Image 1 (tube, rainbow, N blue to C red):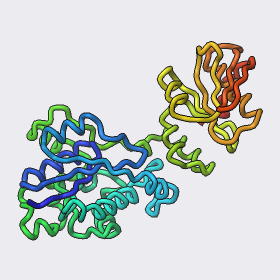
Image 2 (image 1 turned 30 degrees about the horizontal axis):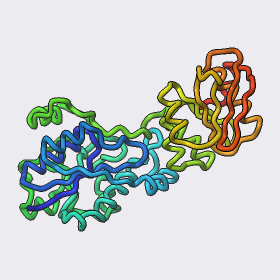
Image 3 (image 1 turned 45 degrees about the vertical axis):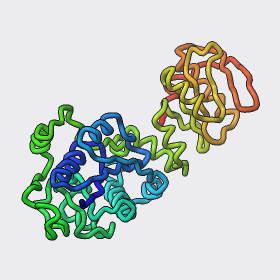
Image 4 (image 1 turned 120 degrees about the vertical axis):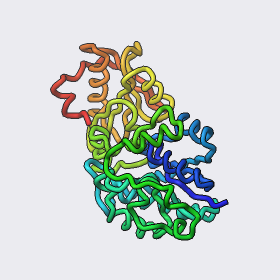
Amino acid sequence: MHRALALYSGGLDSLLSVLIIKEQKIDVIALKFLTGFVSPLKEEDLNYAKQFNFEIKEIDIKDKFIEILKNPEHGYGKNLNPCIDCKILMLKETKNLMPQYGASFVVTGEVVSQRPMSQKRELLTVIEKKASLEGIILRPLCAKLLLPTRVEIEGIINRDLLYDISGRTRKPQIALAKKYGIEKTPQPAGGCLLTDPCFCKKVRDLMVHNELTLKNIELLRVGRHFRISKRCKAIAGRNERENEILLNRYTGLFLYPSDLKGPVILLSGEHSEDDVNIAASICVYYSKRKNAEIVIKSEIDEHRKIYNAISEEEIVKYKV
């Protein structure tokens, strides 16, 4: 039996592409690439793999992706999404895994002209060449609009059973989902946070201050963020769950009300006494009081002091 490796985003198109190829008696292993800006595999993904009998694996490329994010060769999309370079990276990693899994070709859920940056017809060819995968990337949803791949020419895949979908319409994919008995239709794509303008503002702040690390990227998903100074950030928990995450997963200088009625704030980076004072006043502000006793706790020391809340005008200056 022939085997393919499939790029799997968690979206509908990638799932359908796996099923279309499996229908032709090809063994498919789906690869979910973790960049640090997409969700890991969800229970829903694992249920699909079980329901339709295909293997699914997570591949961590966070370190490599961060380097691309800093200076993508093909630029960014509307926000900070380096879609072309990201796709090339994933395909290169997939190529490297082909011998390990005995795979003879690669499957993606791309649709011609669906995405303005990375799925233009001419760019698909560029991406193939950059990844050194010319002729062995099969795109089942739009294959009939493209030149035949090697596996089609060799008769491993029946081209007549592939599709000619193009553009941003979702109707053909919805129809295919019904055909395969997919009751809850997944979102079109996997949901990269680098397409979110608000999240990208926080990423840009890290890039400007040369703080783009895996730990700092992970922290962007938690709390409100404040740039206190060039080398110091404050992250304030928005609820009890986020307070616990900050306290239990990270180390550093923590600030919180002595009566625990308010946010936990983690100071990240190097901080001065003025930075601590500003963070404490932010802590009071989100405690919804004019003043409060704030605990300031490090790994080696703990003390308490009464602080006044920062004003609404001032807090805007620091919020990322």
